[in-house]
Image (cartoon, rainbow, N blue to C red; front, side, top):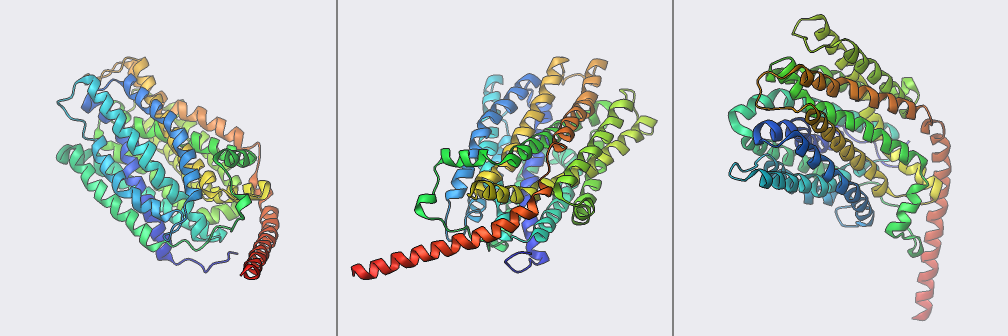
Length: 474
């Protein structure tokens, strides 16, 4: 039960539009940037891996800094909303720049251009926009059911957007070119983010703090380090989005060289994303059935292991449309998609719970720093995933100029798509079984409610005493 009125469906839809705008930007990067660099621009797979990984090193710092900045932001527009407004236009511009590597540049200059545009898009601009967006959940409402349904609607919308992008982009890129399609996507993303900004209001005001309670960056990190579940959530985000980065970046290679049809990428994406959307929509009921978000994460990892395991064991380089391993692959991807849908909603909805656990544990609520887990894990995971694709392709001397790839390369493409994600999923499952926030959260919220009331009363009393002292001086 929250302290603000229940949200309308339109407010939840508008909240989801913000993530859909981010999805339009980021899914194009995650799905198509690697193959754009290797096959269209002519950058080697090893160089692409180096770009992806080096940018992620800077990302680790930018998320922590932006989390601190967000905690310090206090404006008439709120804490999170102004950053969405300020960063959205630049994010769309840099998407266009990323997919506009000039042909007249030399090979080294192309690598430098790719690094710089990718750096500013992900490290600077996307960090500001997405971290602010993710933290908006805790400012819009404190009702647990509303938070769960907001995230469910949000991920249904992003799943639908991902399906459309998967089908449209390979075809549209051939007719409009990468520049043309990215201009269209940039305008659409900007409109979606502005809808989120104008409709979603920050109803939950930060708990007032006395001057002596204000923390430095170092003190904020010390407080955050006491939050055990912060580390678990960082690990979950990194594992899941490393998987997403690997399969997203390598999906076009699977379609082009194993199935031998670029346009089939849309169908591959649909098979995983449609079950994901259904799982997102049903998440409030799934969470109730499994008795919590953490238990939902465990269930999601089990589905990951089964789905990727089926693909690893049975799919071969001789797979063709209609063969038995082709249908096994589709079933495995669908199971993975269900697990991914459960995970998406559970992890993002749990961030607010982890922030509240941190407040209970250390006596400080650090929304921005805690919400940096989503942006940090999201981008580090995707960066590692993209780098893995480049490393594996480079290890087998991938040559984009060959119409028919050697068996070693085809086997590497299958390993990228199925075996490596399976290993990561097993690691995630083991971690999820080591702890459980669901077991302590009810008691945490019960004690926090009492503590917040006591702190608010103490601050009001202090302000009253200061006011009386000022009157006495006058």
